[in-house]
Picture 1 (cartoon, one colour):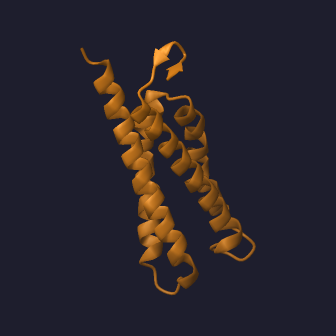
Picture 2: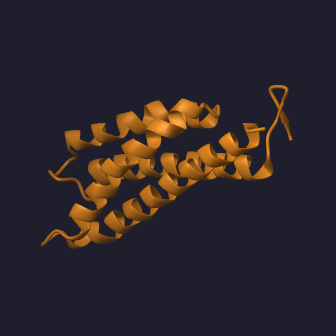
Length: 126
């Protein structure tokens, strides 16, 4: 596949789309969770702003910016931790499926970003 006069391996392209899809999924999940599905306060909460760092990552993930893939692997652990805390919380029955989905999306995003960086670095080495 030709992109920007650089040959992109199919595996690199696949990890790009998995990472972008998971990040977009986390953004949509975070917004829906805090505004409609199971907000901390009735009517929505300011916790919806937690999606802003992921929104900042979306353009870089889409454009294959290596730096974005690297810092996203660090950022994603905040969302993973939130999912684990909310999944283990007492009295939050409505939030358990959302928390599990957040955990799955976070781990998948981490794996896709890590694999993307490894594959790109491996393809550049002599």
